[in-house]
Amino acid sequence: EAQVTQNPRYLITVTGKKLTVTCSQNMNHEYMSWYRQDPGLGLRQIYYSMNVEVTDKGDVPEGYKVSRKEKRNFPLILESPSPNQTSLYFCASSRGLAVYEQYFGPGTRLTVT
Amino acid sequence: GQQVMQIPQYQHVQEGEDFTTYCNSSTTLSNIQWYKQRPGGHPVFLIQLVKSGEVKKQKRLTFQFGEAKKNSSLHITATQTTDVGTYFCCSNDYKLSFGAGTTVTVRA
Image (cartoon, rainbow over all chains, first blue to last red; front, top):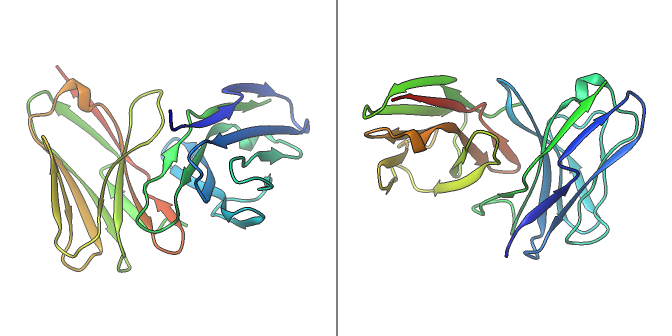
């Protein structure tokens, strides 16, 4: 089954404790991206990757890191989480940027206390 | 920042009624996509519009791309409880940009 998986689905952590949210897709997609969703703000792009070893900042990259060592995986790293990073996070993948639909993962609900 | 603006933010609809949600941009878009997110779920692709003035239908949903390719609309007729959720438009020119979404609730 074609899908995007994220882990963990739920995470409660404390300020400053490094964490990684994994994202994996099995569709051989080149384009992957991370979004955060906050009430009233919709989906805001954090980082995206056009292909292996190619990443770039989205609209809200501060406080986040990503890597793309393999085509299928695109982990999101929070080196020192802060309470303002409490949010719902989605990973997405697609065949490319223009005219291709995005496939979203199930989401990760992160709470930073 | 967001390239596309959606209105209204919230839409409360009586079951059986019609409603429309709008997506507007200050710049010309190469294409527009629409997604639906059910409560507690993730966004799911609905449709893509590419041509000026394009109209596409999916059962009770009608999607339209403006002649100037600066706006788009989603019209739902005879709203049902299954239409509950948040509808997002998305432009994907040099990078993806989602609108803030229209959250739809239905009164039975």
